[in-house]
Structures are given as structure tokens and as C-alpha cells.
Amino acid sequence: MINQHSENLLKTQLENAPVKGYIFSWFDWFCLWYPPGWLIIFNRHWQHYHTDPDGWNWLEYGLFLIPGGFYLALLSRWLRLGFRSPRTEVSEFDPKYQQAFRKEVLAPIVEYYFRGELQQVENLPQTGPLIVAMNHAGMSFPWDFLTLGYLLSKARGWVIQPVASPTLFEHPWIIWWLPPKWSQVLGGVRAELDDFEAAIAVPTSIAIAQGKILLYAPEGIRGLGKGWRKRYQLEKFDVSFIKLSDRYQIPILPVVCIGSESLHPWAVNFKKLQKLIKLPFFPISPLMLALILFPSMGVWAMRTRLHYFIQPLEPAQLHNHSNKERKITYRQAQQLREKLQIKINQLLREI
Image 1: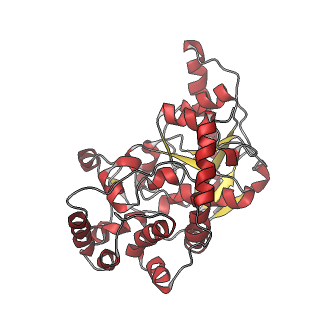
Image 2: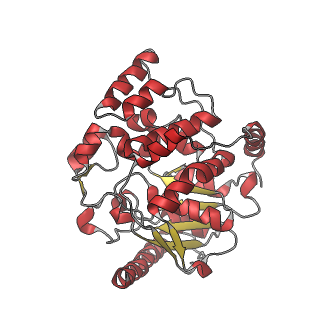
């Protein structure tokens, strides 16, 4: 049954969205070429579609581009806002803005920088609902997730919502770096059971015909923060996505990504500092000097090739998840992990 409030809100968002799209200027192309400028592109694109008086201004953008200038830009903005954090009122998922962001910002980055490609497309169903389960790695901004979302949307026209750690929605660094509730507006779902379940159970009107498509990392934060020495070694899978797949009879589409480990190469997760600053990971690598001088490079990653291998669909099972069935569910999750690990090892030998 359609949630009437969500449908009306979505219709309002679609009607009020500006008609004129965002066009890259020479400054945007320069920022795309110059890594500290990627954060500028994200914010400028947002400001084109949304009124954001608390956002970064031109002086602060200029400071982003010089060594250590981001700290001055942060101080300037903090003083300009009267010693407070940016407002965060906007929070609803806006499929129209997600589509604009993918077409106007992600397209050049994915196609020319990360060179993303879908392989074994014959395994890709025509419609959902689906839980797309992918190995998530790289200890960097989630470019492997964003790239897969872009490629699936381009191939099937799907509206896709990625599931992410709650820290990536509300950490003070994220609040200052990115526009207000940017992740939620682009479709992000907090990796908490209630949010995950609500995203599956309540479809948006634009996705009813095709079914809900959720992008999920079964390893959770363990996979993202395992570090360079354990690259392409899958961590233990959580069972929440198996439970929800069975409960709502939604099949799982496994996807293997090769190339994501090179997004932030040679990185080691500094766990003590990670816990101190309450981030899901804190990479220590040769890139750290550049990141200290240019904190806006936190959304940048090394150039690589992201290849996605679509695996055969895993149908939902008829489990009731009693105490006895939990063991079966856990075994099912780990069997899928082993199957994907074998596929990863095979692909690494072939590439």
C-alpha cells in the first residue's frame, strides 16, 4: 500500500524542481581536474538546485584550492554563520535531484575517471524489488557504491537507495563538508534495522512500477576499514539483509566489484584515532600529507577502473527466523560470502 504522505511529498518535490539543468563551467572542469575541488563541485551543484544561505561562498571556495586554505574557509564560514553549525532542515529523499546529480556530476567522474563498467549484464533482472549486495572497500568516499548506483540506473532506469553507516549522515565533518542532509536527499538509508526495513516496506511513487532497489554492503564497516593488507578478503557478512529478504520475499542480487581496493591504496585503518574522532575508519597512508593540507580531498579517490560483475539472482527463502532458523540464516549469509570470495579470487587471477 502506498504511503500517501510520501507520495504527496514526492510529487511536490518533482513539481518544484527547477527545469534548467546544471552545466559545467570552466571553473567546474578545473575543479574536476584538481582533486581539492571535487567538494566544490558537490556543493555548487546543490546550490544550483536548492536555496542554501548557510552554504560555502566564492571566497571560501577559493580558499579550498590552496594548501591549508580549507581551515581558513571553515573559520570564515563559522564566523559568517554566527558561531553555529549549518542548518539541516532538508532531509527527504528526492529522486529528481538524485537523477540530476547522477547525470550532471557523477557521469563525467564515473565514465572518465573511475571508468566504471558492468559485466555479466545477462544476470541483471529487468525490474525489482531487489537488495543489491556488493563487496564494499577502499577506505575512502563511497565511490564504488555511487558508481554502481549510477551504472544500474543508466542500464535499467532504476531509482536506487544505498544503505550507509549512520556516522556518515551525522558526523560533524560531514555536516560541514557537504550540503544539509545531502546523503538523505540523494537516497541514503541509515544502516539501522528500522530505517532499512522502512525503506524496503514503503515504496516511493516513482519506484512502484520497478520495485524498490536497495544497495547494501553485507560486510558493513568491517569491509570498508579492513585495510590494504586484507584487500579482496571478504569479512564476515551480517545477516540483516538475509532476514529482510526473506521477510518481504525480495531476492538478493550479488555483485562483485574489482578495483575498489585501489581507491585509497596502501591504507591502514588507525583504529585508536578512528574511535577517538568517532568515524567508521581513519586511513593512514602516503596520501595523508595531501589530505592534511587539503581536507576537501576527503571526497576524492585515486583513479582506477571499477568493474562490476553481476552474479546470478539469489531468491528469497521461506524462513520465519525463530531461534532454530537463525542458524540457517547465518549459514546462508556465510555461504553467499564464500561464493563471492571464490568469484573474487577467480577474477583476480584472470585480470
